Image 1 (cartoon, one colour):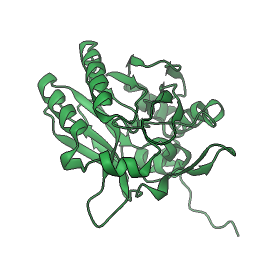
Image 2 (image 1 turned 120 degrees about the horizontal axis):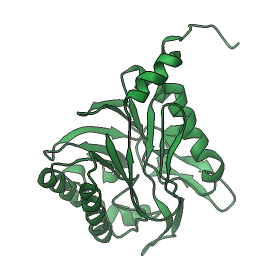
Image 3 (image 1 turned 135 degrees about the horizontal axis):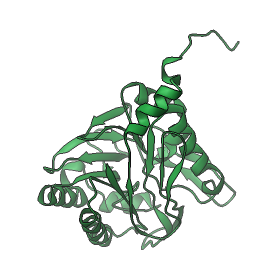
Length: 277
């Protein structure tokens, strides 16, 4: 299976982001990718909730989703939109951070709304309260593709190992972790967390990421860590994309999933226990 990860530096200009996205999707298709994966908040990176309220749309109205579905159908290309920032359907007033798997006919194969909200204070100058603007999802998702079953997650989810174990036990062979990871935590946490989730589950971890300083016409700018990664079921780093934008192609040997799970069948070794008290 050949995957292509798009590492982007999205701004808060939705139209500009879409133009760049379509160019990169075409590059990935020409490289022979079976599945193309984009980062978290592919359509917009913005820290301004009022501005987001003005420019964001519902899933049914979103221009980025419409254009990518058309591209997928025309090129017979599977695409995982790592996530889009979308307006929710009433009565929910907060936005949705939604990952969408699109098949080669342009149909939406699966949806996953980010469950774990990034409410942290990384430093005195870097604070996030994602739950103030985004509603958390409530359902874990495993989706079937012609190559493998995919467990869909987003960014901060990576810190919650129980989610990935549940996805693997439900059949996921690939774990997707599209991200806009903080540069304050990325150097120490990003790679070890991805390796841990891959090793624990005997699955591939595929993590396309935003990178760099994101232009903002409204509100303060944001920086992200980059380093899109692919980790094997044995924990090997198959890709570290560094901090430059681009299209990064990796070939996966899916037999490595069964091999890792045969060698260390920890998914079958759960124990019921009491405590701690």
